[in-house]
Length: 344
Ligand SMILES: [Zn+2]
Ligand SMILES: [Zn+2]
Image (cartoon, rainbow, N blue to C red; front, side):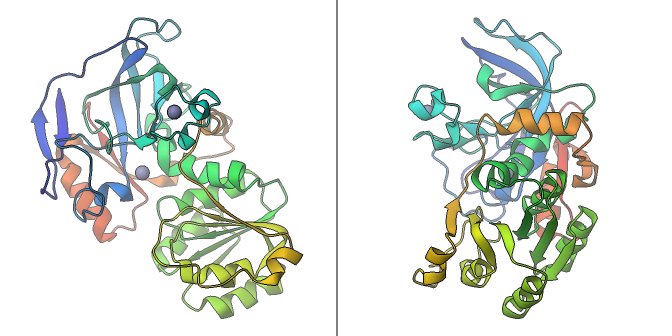
């Protein structure tokens, strides 16, 4: 099969003919029709920040396609069934995995980082990692559910425990945060407040349904404006800019949750202020998603309550993967997701 392969020490991927992956017990072979190019793919290619356990490897972790073949023991899927492939990898045996909370597995990993991913014509994954996709959902919208949409969904719905009618602030409106805006809206937030330092990202946030957008540069003043209209029930921070945490947290309602998704460096910059106790505030971390998110998201798309049309910036054959990485890096087109189509 054709695949985009990452070699150690090379910033760009090589398009190669490689062996088709072996199909084992309990596994499914999927023809990859669409795979999103994620910001984290830049961290193993153009801007290497993450050292992988082994090379060469095929990246790509936001994919969807159709079933080509089921391995022994897989009886509930048919050839041709459209599926979304979960981005997370896990052991499948520990108590977290058995409880459907596989993002808490001690061996948790990501397709394309810890084992071969989906910038390829085929991928083989465990049956538990594929989710049937109805014909009503475009395949490329299904693909980006796997990370760009499921990660903010998990953070908002399950870790942040958002309820309809609550106010939500999204800090950082890149590839994940922009979907946080769409999800908060789909889950009927009363206010969806978007913060970013990039005007293109704020334009996207407005189109995605944010009710208020603010440049985050002068956050202290901005928070005064936001709080003039009322404090916020849930804040989800995709920015990784820890220095902003205290300004944000001060604007939470009693019982409010500040959920950290974006990885950053340094300290939060404050010892726990007394108001955190008086207002019963909490700071939570959210990582990836578990088995609850994809089925609910697929239903939200199927019912039309969520539409990811604006998220698909453009589609490209596998041979253009490096151009897509460079375009994502330059942000010239203000992209949300470039989609690779390995079958084309
Ligand atoms: Zn990703
Ligand atoms: Zn496990």
